[in-house]
Image (cartoon, rainbow, N blue to C red; front, top):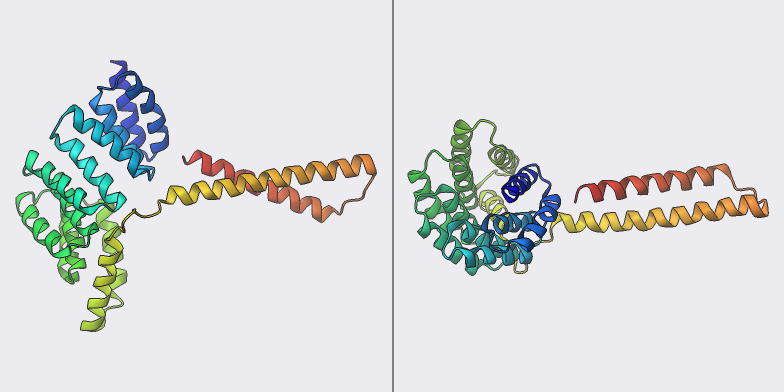
Length: 278
């Protein structure tokens, strides 16, 4: 029962964007109970959200070993491979997941997105077109289809797909995001040549290079490190100035003190915010 409560809490943390806390919570669970399939799946999801695709893949493959051929583990195996830029393996895992649970729109979406990340736009468009015919009730699938249509040079059809997603789920965040992205791109389309260029540029943004993309968490961690170092330097400077004033009687200009205090405060705030976001 306690494990179930922990998994529920980890799931809530992931849903609220607190993947770091979820990973910390799940680590002792899989350590104490390595046969806990649900914990490994959640851990794969957490690692992926944190930009750790290698760790996510390890967790997903452990889950797959516990339940060979399970579509949920295959989903996260595929997503991990996509994040790493290992596209053939990502597509193969996604296709296997679809075979394990045909008609599941979430798995069809993963398959389509794996193809888009690999730059196989035509295949993604065909696959997702067939999938939305089967699961026309799924908003996320319509969003993925719209992205494939846009990448294939059909922005008007993409707008229609996003519209269907919003008709099914008026507050669908991915649909709203992609619709805004499409609207901004359409302003740059004035003729056939610009249409091809804009759509090709969009398709390129969906591609993931070999080795994967740098995750924003890495940039956040780097900023936190720089801020922490800056805070340390400011603190040492303040201590030195205080010693100079008290021991040697040195007159330190007030603007200098204010500047160092301000820099220390700013560095401390940035350090705290980046650590809180983990």
